[in-house]
Every structure is written in structure tokens, then in C-alpha cells.
Length: 193
Image (tube, rainbow, N blue to C red; front, side, top):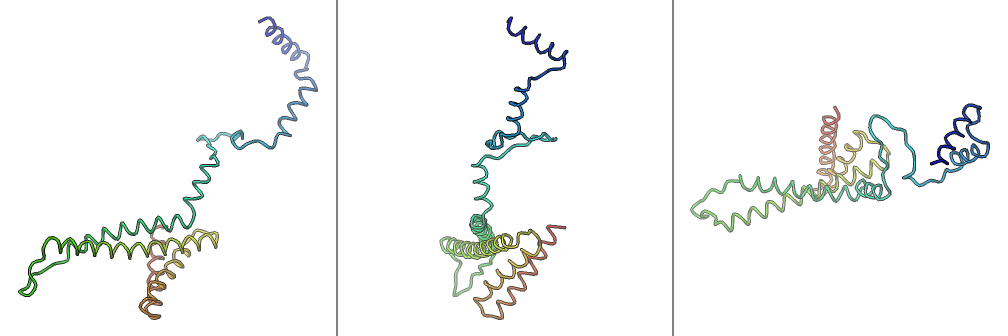
């Protein structure tokens, strides 16, 4: 307690005489502030703004890099496309009329469920292929160009439509490329404006 009072008196006395820090103390402070450039990220001092700034750890950056990678986006689109296509296929199969005729009686529940399964899987596979191809190509184009704009989706639509249309021939491939490119451009334009 007496030592603290003496230190406080010394500081106030130094303040009265104009000497707050000795040259050795100033040297130590300068070395700490200037020479200490090899700190870990967590020890950085960041100025405060209206909201607190939170630094990401190495693990968070690694997870973010995986989530933003082209293979992850393509595989995620594959699964999302399968689920969406499956739902549309289920709906399409459920509204398809099955009219009984004399040579074809009313289908049994097993036949109806089999038809629902076939339609759901077929639509799911088609949508999964479109989602996988479009998302992967768009991400690759965006990574190559280094820009995020309407051209990425348009180019990806052209490639996707062309590849899917080539199964039916060159003319269908060109028509598919043009159709997908126009549709992708229209969606991009609508979403950005």
C-alpha cells in the first residue's frame, strides 16, 4: 500500500516537473509498438466502428473456402436439383390423368405408385444434371473472369443448354445453347434490377 502511494506520488511529481517517462521507458514503449509486427491474428487491434468487428479464425476461413469452392457449389446444386425435380415430377405424375378404357382397366395402387416413382426419379435426375452443370460452369467462368456479373450466367446457360441439347444433335445443341443463354440472361436481369 505504501509502495503504491509512493509510485502515485512519483508519477504526479514527474507530471509537475514535466518528466512523465524516462528515456528507457519511452524506448521500451517504442520497441513494443513499432518492432512487434509478427503478432498472431487474434491479437490485432482493429478500430471500432458502429458494429463490432470480428476476425475470422483459420478454421472459419477454411470452412468458408470449402463452401465457396466450385465443386461444393456444383454438388450442392446437384442435390438441390434432384429434390426440386423430384417434387415437380411427383406433382406432374399426380395430375396426369389415367382414363380407364375397355382394354386398359383402372390401374392398381401399386401401378400408380410405380408410375409416381419413375416420374419423380426421372425429373429429379434431369434437374440434378442441369443444376450440377450450370452451377459448376458458372462458378468456373466466374473464377476465371474474376467478376460477378450477368455474363457469367449467360455463358453458363449457353454451355449448359448446348451440352444438354447435343444429345439430340448439333441443331438441337445450338438451339438449347441459345435458349438457355437467353433464359439465364432474363433471370439475371430480373434478379439484379
